[in-house]
Length: 234
Image (cartoon, rainbow, N blue to C red):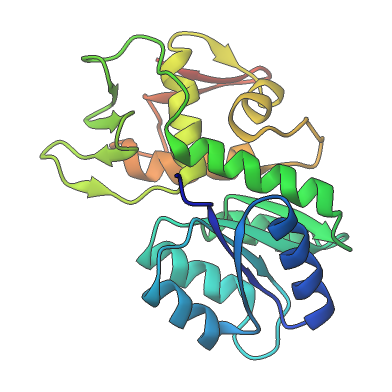
């Protein structure tokens, strides 16, 4: 029998923590709760975790600091809980490596959909398509993306740290080589999210990826900007 995905809910508000945990458990997930950074760090070090649902605004060590720690020490998927009006929180959360965000007050159905989406992206169940070097490899400049192991490797085969969402975005480009994709298409294909004129998550992630795959990120040659249209993986 396949084990249920393990989700950790980290929030300093007991009502939110318990409501989210109960809802996810009813939908088949194994859930552990944490009230702050120390408890979360202990959990991450002690057992496998698939997704962390992390509140940004917590006393003591805030969610952004914890997200940065998680991204530096693991490949766990991270969903941030943000204030509905705090656009800057969403932007910074994505910049430090979060995979997605849900606004407070939390809509439990939306949160469940987000959890399912990030798990789909990290499960490796979707078949690879496109023009690859070998059945499971896509070339990005001097780097190689392994579509089976979800790893990005540099020219000498050393792992380059990428988030699950960054992997999914690279996979979408690999599947659409030579085709210009606009933000709407990228959000739909890579993030399961409709377009919003204020949603800059695609631009943020592409900027982060260029620092990893381009020889000169200020003059990108692998993922090019097509002004007024979108992005092109050439």
